[in-house]
Every structure is written in C-alpha cells, then in structure tokens.
Length: 196
Image (cartoon, rainbow, N blue to C red):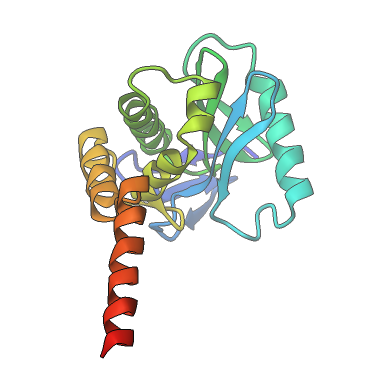
C-alpha cells in the first residue's frame, strides 16, 4: 500500500489512500542487531522485539533471508526485507545489520550501525574481522549493550561508548593476577579466623 508523508517535519504522520494515520512515537527504535560472517552464519544477535521473531528458527530464517538479499553489496546499504527496514555494512568477512520497523527513520538506524562499527573498530584496533571479533566477543556484547538497551538507542557517539566500555572493564578487572590476589586474601582470612 503506497504511503505519502503529510508533513516532512513529523515522521509519525502519513496517509494511505486518503486516510490519515498517526503513528505513536516510540523510543523502541531498534528491533534487532546481528553480525554474520561471510557465509551467513550468526556470530552475534540480539532481538529486542520478542514478538517479531520469537523462536531461534524464525530468527535464523530471517537472518538467512536478509543475508541472501544483502551479501553481494560492496557498500553501506538500506534494504527492506519482510516488512522491516535494515541498514547494513560489510567489512572483510563480516556483515553488520541493524533492523527497525518499516516506518523507522533510516538515518537513526544508520547512526546506530556506524556507532557500532566505529566502536568495534577501536576495540579491535581497526582489525574488524571474524577471528578478532570472536576473540573479543565479551567486549563486542558490552559495546552493543552500551549503544542499545531493550531496543532504545542510548548512545550514538563511538567515543562515549568506548569510554563507558573501558570504564566497565576497569571497574571489574578479572585477570589471573587479581584472581590469585583474591585467593591469597581468602586464605589469609581463613587462617586468621581459625587461629582466633
């Protein structure tokens, strides 16, 4: 059904066949984020709208359809698959996707995608490829969680995301040395409690 915008300044106002419809504004902009390898295999995915694709099988079928439609592109693109607006970017052997509803602002989705890609570029030291991504998957999930929470866009500035992710990593350092220090401290506390 063709739609025409009644007012370019209001993205929630559109008309179809002479009937005016107002779409309620929503903070829940992003429906899903996923990263696939160059064979279309899922490396990371987060679906924020549980009703959209409730089962793993439906999610993987959707991802396969999206990949089949988009994997031959060489540049950043926008696609419409199964009534969803999808912005995507490819890098070496990875495909990054951000999914929104059919009425969603493509520029907002592209801002999320660019923030994700640039943040990962900094975390992975400009080596945005499958092996490095898998080696640093915990950091990748932190980046995604700093950008989007439950479908709501929290941040679109990569520098702010990196700052927050580094703060979180510094807040809970869990290296082998710190584990050894915790174990030593626990041994000493047990020893002193037994001697008392």
